[in-house]
Length: 79
Image 1 (tube, one colour):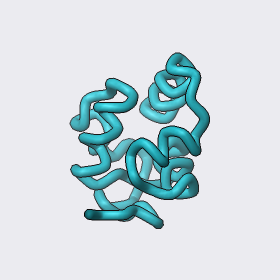
Image 2 (image 1 turned 30 degrees about the horizontal axis):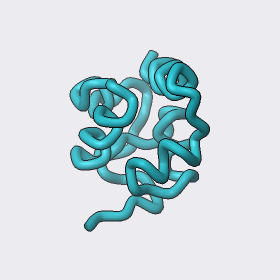
Image 3 (image 1 turned 30 degrees about the vertical axis):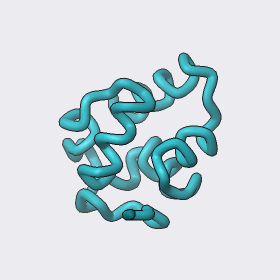
Image 4 (image 1 turned 60 degrees about the horizontal axis):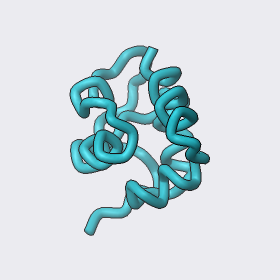
C-alpha cells in the first residue's frame, strides 16, 4: 500500500511529516493528505517526493482507493 510506503520511507530517513513537506515545498497538511492516501500529488510534487524519499513518481501518481485527481493536494505551492 502506497500510504505505508511513504510513511516507512519517511521514518527510515528520520523525518517528520513537516520535514518532508518543507523539503518538497507543500504544506504539512497537504503532505499528510498524500501520506494518508486522501490526495494524489501533482507530477511536480511526486518528482520532489522521489528526490526526498526515493519513491518513484509513477507509484505516487497511481490512484488506489482515492477519487482525488493528481495535483489536488491542498496547500501545494508551485513556483
